[in-house]
Length: 289
Ligand SMILES: Cc1cc2nc3c(=O)[nH]c(=O)nc-3n(C[C@H](O)[C@H](O)[C@H](O)COP(=O)(O)OP(=O)(O)OC[C@H]3O[C@@H](n4cnc5c(N)ncnc54)[C@H](O)[C@@H]3O)c2cc1C
Image (cartoon, rainbow, N blue to C red; front, side, top):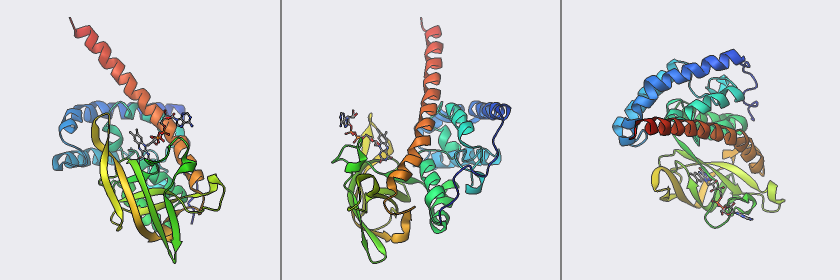
């Protein structure tokens, strides 16, 4: 089953409603997000007991306020505000690195939930998307490879071969963000080797506890390992054929569906972060002798 396109069923917000939404988000940032930043600097919201507990409290608040999972339609467990209102909301969420997690819209879980909603079977949605959207589990997206340039993903070398009713996946990935701690990965692999380059790839769900799924190391980015942009090896990893998203060979189409909106959302968060940095700089310049 392919689910209907995200946002198809939800009502379009008026400009005034988007403004009001932004004000509500700003108020919550002032009352609950900024005051907690120092705490989360010392207690990981994913890995420390105190950090996880505090993050759950914040998440319970955004859920109670009806501001949970703004990237998804209500039928998929989200706010149902549609693309543009979420764009404007992201400009505010980007002001703090902990805000997306508190609102249930952190990458790469947000993009994974979107493609599970748009292209996953009901079985995949029940098993993986629902707990993901609820904030009970984390996930990762495994596409980039050390051996080939990510700028041209037609080169990707990870393969998925059919064997009976299973895929057998072999490959080597890195920069798989949130690889450590993820319950499952969505893996981009070449399954249709006789097809033209943009029809070769498929996206397949791989539970992280499947034999052959091995985290090699977190790849540091600017000295930071918290995000765990993992190097991962896939060695004879076997998953059911039904773990595929959409049709075999449809991997590039799904990737574009994800990246198109994803780029805009990332840009808006970076704008928010840049504005905050600019404000901090001005504040500091006025204090410093
Ligand atoms: C913080 C972070 C998180 C990430 N998270 C994920 C993730 O969760 N999952 C995932 O799969 N990937 C992830 N990535 C990887 C990211 O998608 C890739 O880094 C990106 O696609 C670029 O690929 P690459 O690193 O192989 O660089 P390359 O493609 O090797 O590019 C290196 C440089 O060479 C240039 N270049 C490449 N080809 C050409 C050419 N033909 N001509 C001229 N110049 C060229 C590029 O412009 C670039 O300057 C993440 C990366 C970062 C930094």
